[in-house]
Length: 439
Picture 1 (cartoon, rainbow, N blue to C red):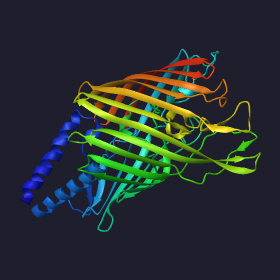
Picture 2: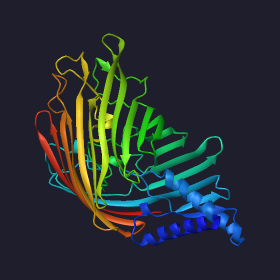
Picture 3: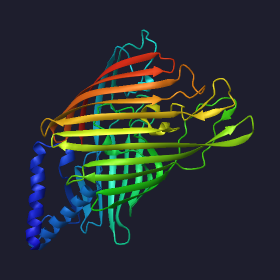
């Protein structure tokens, strides 16, 4: 019976390897190398070896994370003879070339917030080439009798310094066990599977892909149909200050929480409700006191597989003082703004955004997608200047093709606009092409 089960496992692995000729890197199983196992072994030892390889592959299959800006499965896994410890190294090389016309986004990424509002000789067109989003990662798994499966993950790209400096930057660095994640990871408020694939590294401007240092707990139930998570995350306040209000160190973590319902046999469709609560401190220089403001946000997001060849993505977010949780507003200084006519008053601004997209799979090798996204900051009494950001729009369409299971090419068109509180508007257009090779 044991040999029968192992034969079936070998058949499944072989089937996955055969599918490599038409499937992208995300779909197929890695090659497993067992440390301390000789090539010439007896029949029973060969069966044990196959079982260990299957166990190591299963560890990485069950802990692999899909979604926006996530890496493909590793090409190689190195495991000990008893599969107590395993390690995978991988990443990808990504080269993107872009051309902006009829207006530019003044950034390597297509960010509506960075679209100039006045046209001049230097912001009508531009050529960009970038490989700084190339990625390296390692992932270790320890199967512990006490802690169960322990996952250690770290990845880095080359976006750590000034533009085109190619300074290495740590993206994620965490350990995960018993439902806890401790370290630096994508914020718990982000629904990784709710955004479409884009060549543009930033993605839809209403999405909320950001990193935070955190302590998070997640729990799945009802055969993984239901899932919830809650975290304490390091806050990042981006406000506009003046002589009356000064920046100060924060004291209370952001608290994001979510509940998710998933369906389909592989649980690849889901809907998620999320919320985030923030306590933000600012120094009142006039009254010589510390003031605390309560920010909050809510989000509804998800992805739905309508049929095998059609998938939908979406998210909608609303709140006050939540700029780290909306792509277009990160670092904008709009969490809190002072009163224009009375500088001794400061207030949170309401803000919201939504995005919707669809992906059509033309064949196992190719797909195309398109979508629309917008962000809006509401004007509140006199707490906004005429030149302050009011609205951003982001429209995209793209096509991807897998030349080999590890090599993918793509092309993309982007249109964006920025409008200020006074109604002045700027627009931009961008063509992206990309070559990406996973290893």
